Length: 321
Image (tube, rainbow, N blue to C red; front, top):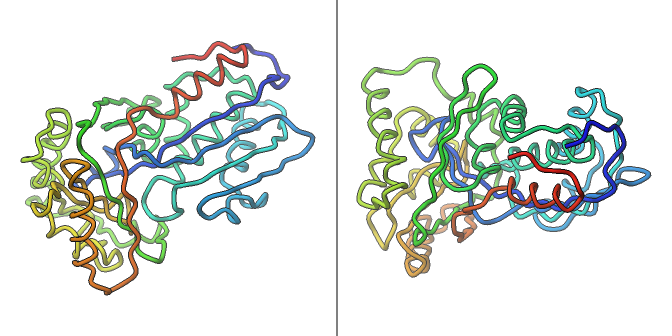
């Protein structure tokens, strides 16, 4: 990318997939991208504006206290670049505060816009590190940017990431309750220390998790998604969790865990053909105890980085890999 201060003439169009983190035992360490999205188109303008459609459209269209705009301005200010006003068109399919990576998608969107309109020249390593600093954990941002199943760890100023493509036949169901749950509240219920037996059980499970995805081991996924570090403490405020985890092994359901910090639950099924019966089973398990919405989806094999590279190349700016 060039080091010029003026905004690039071309606009930008990006798609940021939803993500489900933790996947049971991989607390703040693994996530997977899902094929419903935050989509953004932006061009330089005389003043800021947002036209939003989709979920939480009114909230997404607010110019004040808007995660995307505030982060975009912050990135440009920190880099010493002028704030370029944007006209943004946004379509959102990721519910807010449900544990599906809405904040990771929003922050990455803001960073990508700042890199483009501020000509910052950041590569993937820098983008992931800046997003990690904002999020406080690397799993969602790595999955959102790169796609697929990711395991991530931070050392100094580097986010180390390993990626695998999930088995192409597997599908997912995200079960949502009616009310959102702020991540801060979900983290507040966690203890300061854990019993050794619980830690060992999680290490054993997470050791299987990546291999279950990489080798399409549906026979291992159920045990690989068991957790004793965060889910038992969040279950009282994520009431779908105890209703749905016992369904593993029935009607094609091969794994289930809290999606991120909750309150949504990620249910993984063995094939597209299993989605209908698995959905019926979920509704039967909830049995009117609370309202529940289901998002049936596949895994997103391409992350936002691919769209960003295309957008940058079309604007005449060479994208960094």
